[in-house]
Image (cartoon, rainbow, N blue to C red):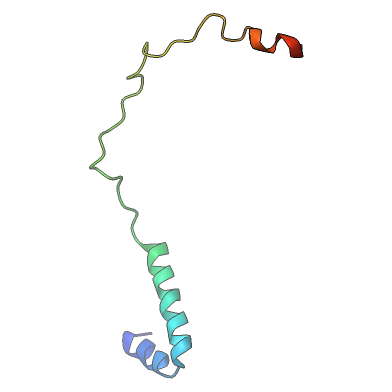
Length: 71
């Protein structure tokens, strides 16, 4: 099917159906578009960059004194 045939068939459709056909074509184009590479403007992440910056108290899991009445 050539472009001319497609255009001729589209011309036979009512305007609201032409709009639906256009939306379908847009969806097909998006579906078959080549995948783009990741955004190169963002810096590459470095794993472990915050190693040693965070600590947790040794008694983190210990019961809190404020809740003694509820146990």
